[in-house]
Length: 459
Figure 1 (tube, rainbow, N blue to C red):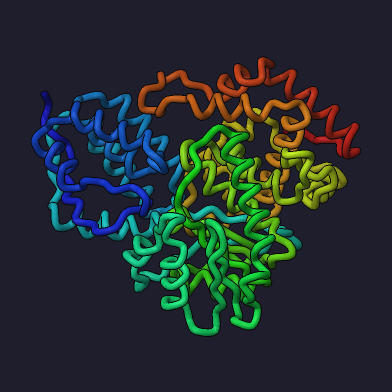
Figure 2 (cartoon, one colour):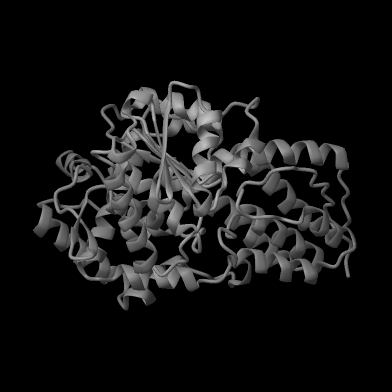
């Protein structure tokens, strides 16, 4: 067996997913002793557990494959981490460095103290880039500078691990948030949710019976319709009412500065959803709730599917016991504006072949952008266009009752570490809908023209 290429000292006391208990000491020992087949088996078991599909699990798998000499498979897994999870430059540096080391024939040892310090800082950054999903609102200026979620390095990340409560511990969860948040915030527990508002004056327990019941109904629909495991954990719902209060709550709750175009986000690390919503209008909260629910079992679905489906339920209504999207939605305006200016739009093939970086940063760049490149190159309207296209594609799928089969195909898709080098995400979709991508594009174009009077200028 060839020597282990990179030996890591994982002396971190918290993890990107607070729900997953990694035995870091054991995993590190397996790496050092080159018992890498055991590490693969144990990491795959973690991956199949609730919330187990995250970049840390796949990073362990990548290192184990390097140890086994499976350089090609390790490379695919390293690449998948960059594409499916991380958008942070520090994580990019770590993954690319590890990938390069894996491909070298000679043994390379890295100073453990340096690696420990670096990986701790990297995981802290990854909490923002990998565990947070945000919702983009209206874009009024295409040339506005779009920023990323920025983490306050002084924020105590271990605090996130204290926020995981079973539903039976709702009273303890309510007390925790009352003690942790500034006294001006209102906190009330109801059902599986702890509602957090910007003022105590806004809180009367009986006023949250109906909002909690509605969110519970939506949550139940999500896990039944999409065939995922329901969680028995409390979810924190921040109803901040406007973007200023949302930004304040994000800084207090998670130590992050949110982009100004952001109107809500979810944090998998502490099972929270935050929005500029109120209990009378929770469309953004429903969007973010979907992100938490779908990642119980299917944490690695691609950006176009994750954001497209979450956006599908921003504006929705009940038809019997099925939650259906509204026909008239605000994101249609984005497509109409592009069509009116005769601007090119991404094809379905282009949309689904892209990674998270392509989707949330830039529609045409295949490389991961650095922070400086991101500030210089990203056009806010391109990103808004990706969201709008993904949402309307989901609306089209919903009209054909194709969503369950699409989700099932991605749910059953194995880790990319076991997929061949010729893996094509287009094939996954074509098999799920029993339709070639060219036919799908034609039918989608006709549907958009017929239903919304939008002629797509596909590039």
